[in-house]
Image (cartoon, rainbow, N blue to C red; front, side, top):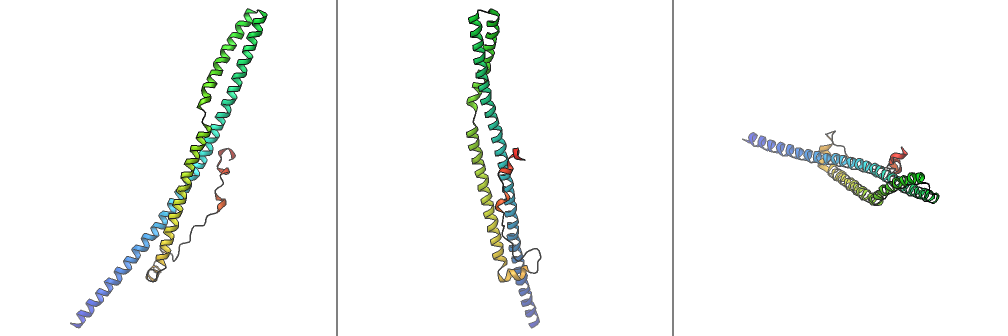
Length: 201
């Protein structure tokens, strides 16, 4: 009878002890996975931000180039129209019909070219585009900050739990769970915005 009671007590103790170990292992594993997930989220956010920075440079360069070319086109069209108009007036003063006809064609062609450039001019939105890109970049930077905060919080949660007495004892038997996870320490100079400009690569 006594042996049966003692055996039952031992079984209960073993079950409680085993259940406690399983519970600690589950908590350690959950916290450890959260740290890994936080690191992955941060890495993805950083990568997205890098791509957006490169995209901002690419779009800005394209629009600035387009704007520059359009301004140049407007100036050339205006100059061409003025030259054609002067040639027509000079031919008219001379009374040279053939020259007037050629100059007239030149005036019409120059006027059409000038009109095309003028119609394109109001569509330029370099400043608005740059502002929109900066808003997108700001969102990406905020996402990085949020991801980094979450990652740091998950590390702190793991280290705090792992440092408690019983989890520390149980965790020491499993190589999977380090006694402490180092906090992320990034280099301020790692992200060089200018180096992400495609024209400087």
